[in-house]
Image 1: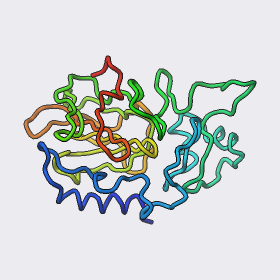
Image 2: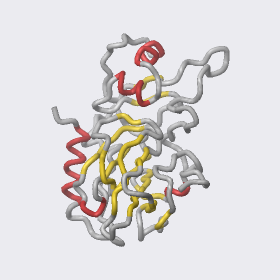
Image 3: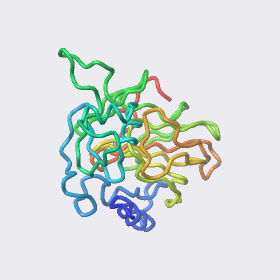
Length: 252
């Protein structure tokens, strides 16, 4: 069965094919209509109201097991914290606890969604915060962000180097439908934040996959000039923002 967000992606990719070139880059699929907050393609119960830290709003296609995997927990844990059977179905718009309930006034495990040594996923109302996202690739920044002239940064690497998810989220696009970006991955992290990874040589995830921060999602490819690199973009509330404002200063 075709899911609502898949129809949205299909429509937006068709529109992107007619997009205006801007500094060598086409319009991204989300430029006309963001994947989030689109009441025509998503149930109105999803809304755009941020969920509290330690909770997650279910998206179409989610499962209890998939959510548990994305946040580094066992399905039984998520089920127990929410008073559900371990094989329970979840519905779009449902809000689930994804970190342990408070005990004796303190949380008994590290922050939700954090793999050992990782960072918590950004919240829907978060302003840019240094270090919230993880570098998707270790390498030199070959092109910086310039509002109105470029939508992200280009990070140099070697062909085949692993490309990693900048934060926990769900893959909403994985394909080669936009020529200027080559094989492209788009990950939705919450109701306001999306990241994109272009110029891969290989895609290791598919649409609908839940991914954890630091998970390998692709491999570095080469651009039209033969330079091994990826194009990394961050969108907040549908607008391109400087990825360097979200990444650790020691990065690339």
